Image (cartoon, rainbow, N blue to C red; front, side, top):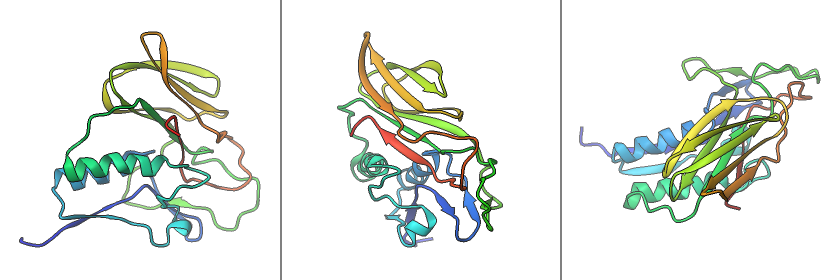
Amino acid sequence: MGKLWTQPVSVQDERPNQGIFDEAGNTENLRATWKGAIDGKADGVQLTTWNDYSENTPFAPSRNAGWTYLDINAYCLTCYKLGCPKITHDVAYLTHRVQPVAAAPSYAQTKLMKLRGGGTAARDTVEVLSMLTAAGKVSVTIGGTTQTYDAPAGVSARTFPLEPGTASATVTRNAATVAKVVSPYPVTATPYVQGLHYRAASSGR
């Protein structure tokens, strides 16, 4: 129609003060909104940050995400502006909540968040997002159970059920460890308060 289009890109949207949240699907929302900008050849991209701390949408480095979202954005932004660059370092990212969506807090909260209608169904998953220079084997340990899979070169994501305990992922190639990330955020089925925003950890920092 001859109009300019600016594609909004976001990590997640979770609003305790309003009692609503949208399912971000680990990094799926972040990757999907960037894909919309790249595939649609958007004239501009907006990294939405206003009210970010009340809506848990910030890209800024934080205690609960480190530099993970900024690092993923750096790669996606390069894809958007110049074409996807060659991956020169093996990196693995872990994202997950610290409680199941349906877990009831022990604290007597007066307002609990509910899923906003019209969006993606809520899910309880741990995601491994890998950016690899060559194919590798990924071992994922969640709540004491280990699973392995073969990850291709480039960018790929795999999800696993969320379980109480800790989560980690190790990437090996030719019997050598090339990337390892341990989430510092334990998962509990009996939270004190409700907290549904995704935590993130990276092997790159």
